[in-house]
Length: 497
Ligand code: NAD
Image 1: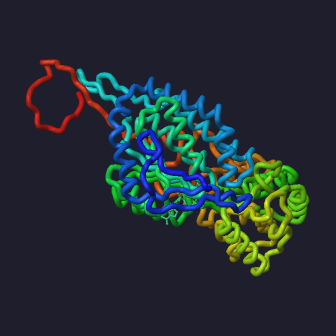
Image 2: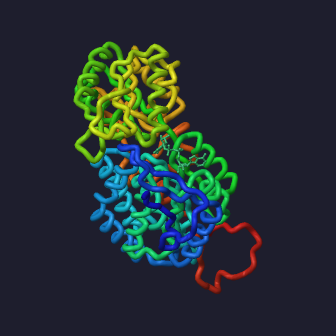
Image 3: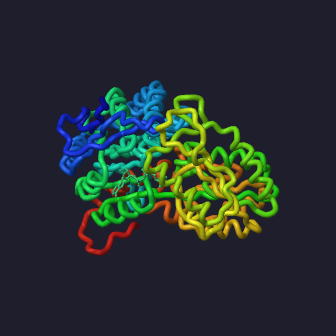
């Protein structure tokens, strides 16, 4: 019988009866392995109420104590990371090493958040006026909401909650209903680390719970990651309700390869960044811009490497797993049909490939198109699957123009041995995260992650100092301790002298 996944509210699993539930699949076998409760607005409101009740106590817990709980959580998560990775592979399909990689990147944010006493330090100016000092402090917001996508069930929530919690907020996470279990395991780890009940809550669900979170007046901020249309919706509804919102959306990441680049390195990295996690990464490379005259040579090198990729069950020794659901697999395959119909050259066709896995898995092998043009939907839209498109461009300038004209601006990369060209690229390109001979430039935890244009709605990127700012509010205190010589009435606007 399928295991039931339910909410985690106020330090324990929810004991109610769900009004609705969804199925969770093993994408490598097509089997329903679990059911997940889909929260009603009432359940979401109960979780927010628990978080609200826990807030004053947690806000007033000393920085030293908060940091020590973060440290304990880091140790538990590190010790149990293989378990988290196994759950991710079981529900998402990505290969185990990749799943472990995402937990490791999440751990880095936890480690960053362990330094919260330093990160929250304010400024102090002594004697701004006679006997008057001014200092700045940053305080938590209250209850914060986090809504995450299916493709990084552990890492993406961890871009946010370690910093939110370390800063003194209490949290309600709404994971993707496609792979909900990792967050519940993480909730247990927080409890084991000594986090008070109610500080970290998990509500499973779909649109109904997202809307309830966006409308609940006690939720002060929302951190969303997902597709662009939903990100825009969440941003607009959340901000209309007076919340602070950061909503990270979709992507279409280009890799510009100049004629002087090391083409073997570029081909290796196009494969890694195009087909890693079956292309289900917001930082995946989906377009290679080959600057004349290297197109033929680069395509040949990519194609030759594709021959050695093994697609199959992520628990086996494979390079690439299945896609997350049958619906998504079929949608990605329909883009391959569309590219072919539009006249792109189908160099490698992932439809109907032989796999090392169950026949009922959601398979689509690595696919390569050449001679893709900008009027094709495979160029314009985010595919979010193992489909790499090569567009031939006549010059560096033409490549940059295409990238800057594209509505998405999450990540991009240039491959070249010319430092001057790379430097010009980093300056001219209208994209939030840039790689120079690095195809997936995901910033470290102490920098901030976020795209430009339709890849992010709101002003703050995730983690790093922007994350600390997002989860805190600034306050400035002007203070005078009694000095009778400066008393007296003066209705003028205060100036300092
Ligand atoms: P999605 O937009 O379908 O879902 C994201 C979240 O929104 C989920 O929790 C889901 O339950 C919820 N949701 C879905 N439909 C909704 C609706 N109508 N109203 C309210 N909430 C809704 O995204 P996904 O398919 O889970 O994830 C893949 C997408 O996420 C891709 O577009 C990818 O580029 C993007 N992504 C972006 C980043 C980034 O940093 N920019 C990172 C990871 C993923």
